[in-house]
Image 1 (cartoon, helix red, strand yellow):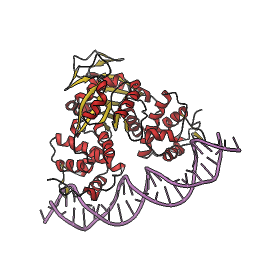
Image 2 (image 1 turned 45 degrees about the vertical axis):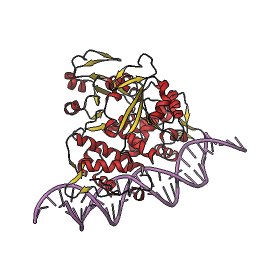
Image 3 (image 1 turned 135 degrees about the horizontal axis):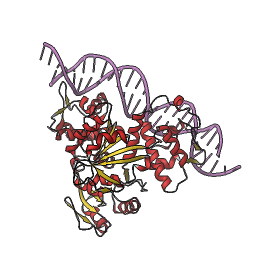
Image 4 (image 1 turned 90 degrees about the horizontal axis):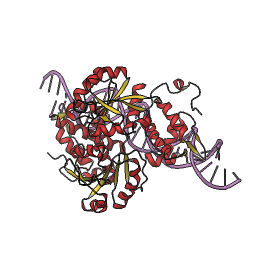
Length: 218
Length: 218
DNA sequence: TAGATTGTTAATCGATTAACAATC
DNA sequence: TAGATTGTTAATCGATTAACAATC
């Protein structure tokens, strides 16, 4: 039940998705992945709305722009929708991640399957502390950052996840840019300066919390 | 140099901010906090734009709706703008957090100052594992969850941060709702079912990554 | 069939941007 | 003064929503 039997995508979506649509589709995907784990087979736009806080009409609208994925009176097939959204986002494949920092946060990420569920595979774990090199963390062995440039090329690493102290973040980012990494996921608080061709996403739980708090306090 | 000398806010912003505005103001605040750490005194809308990827005109527009915080030809005072935004978001005070789970992730959060920078104070660290109770993590001592309900009331806890295994998340959320917690910050992958009066924010780095990847691949 | 839920329209609302005078 | 950057307007564009026929 492949939702796209012809290679018609190039014709249908010649341009990028609007930022908002891409963000929402990613969120639907997360909920669908969890719903599947919980044994759900079908899901309605109303249920998706309960978990994402996106208006159900808008969910149907977002999806219907790309095809008719639902069944009236029934809802959407969880598997079918996962496949459809992955196709729309063109992120159906496997993507390799390098993880930097084997402290508490690095270990937490390396041991979790939060990335694996979405097709991201941690293929390397680096730490600058010689005492940590060689240590085992989950399925990984901590490596020296000296291998960095070769690893990026050899292991086709597109994304670097930074779980390092604030002071180490910018120098490391510079090395990563030079090595050809295109997306840096920054868990430190530092503001990173990189060329425009590289995307930095800084994780900021405190910002999310401020935002949630505003709507609680008002 | 208090940007709001009269208590005119009630008159000026009788309603909630639009969702987008509140989200963006939170992000400006994060950048400003970091800029201050880096010793910056003044900042322009262009610089703010470089770090937030928000259009500089929109930044000025967002801010000018609440007052004239900048100086033409100069920019914004970092300190002044931090105070102004905290005032607009009404999150100028201290807010108490309870943290659940003293595993790798819980330890990482407890030791970080990522929340402290924004006025959030971790006042309690709980773990259900008796072996961990009593252990020291940064400035905290791991407590038993039995104290939960009393702690929420006595220590005025508004936000609970969940760094627990997926299987433990929903039962814990049920307890927290009963104890009167209003905001749950969920670091597990689980979809949590809570009453409408409680806000759940599920952290999903993989979703953010999918989103970033889409714009890299296209 | 009866009930439920999608797909889609039409209308509104808010977000976004370019441009530029005001002014530090 | 000259250069820079804000505050603000006006015009456009996309997001959001209610409503309902189509149909499973």
